[in-house]
Amino acid sequence: MHPHRRTLSYSRVIHLSHTIDPDIPAWPGDPPVEMDEVAGIANNGYFLRKISMGEHSATHMNAPAAFYENGAGIESYDASSLVAPAVVIHLAGIAGRDERNGLSAADIAAWEADHGPVPAGSLALVNTGWGKRWKDPVAYMNVDASGMPQFPGIDVEAARVLLEQRGATGLGIDSPGVDSYRDRDYSTNRMALAQRRIVLENLANLEQLPSTGATIFIGALRLRGGSGSPAAVLALVP
Image 1 (cartoon, one colour):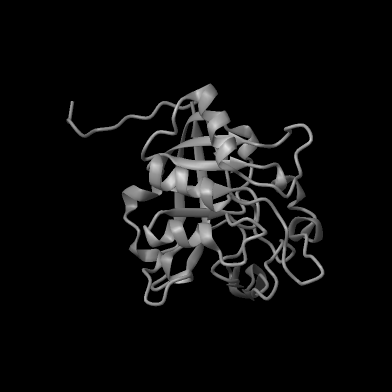
Image 2 (cartoon, helix red, strand yellow; image 1 turned 90 degrees about the vertical axis):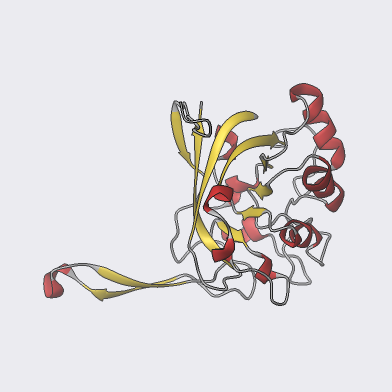
């Protein structure tokens, strides 16, 4: 056997991306999703639409260019970095938890008490349960009186544990962003992207994944200089 050959064994493949249409939730001020027909089967013999959306629309991956002047674009990620084993920290359903509260360092410690340390090189995904709001854009974005969305993210200390202490290859969440809604400086995004790690937002179906054992495939558009890209994310579940 080739010394570097890897094999995968799986029983199910799960979409971790939401379906895209013009009615999906959008960050305040982001461009809307637009789909305009430019050719139809009756008149042209084929069907074709022009699609317009922001680089951070729907389920998407962020790139350093989103937060850093002259930061690397989405096209700079190596293909090998877009395939990774995943751990999933399930916060959904914890009794008495404020839905807006995301991942804390204490939550990581509790997860590791049951599953062992988060392995280096793994993608750390957080199932907060927020994704169940996706079909109600108002509830999903949950914009406050100041115009800022409020939703569960990953607080900066938790991000530091995962990225710097455990060596996670990146972060993902089933809410509009990995940053705590209390953090207006995008500290978790900045920390991850300064190291060119993976950041995935608006993930779907995380409740279907086991805490360990899944492998994630990320299909991001290679937009030159892109601040991010809508992404087709798949999970292979053993």
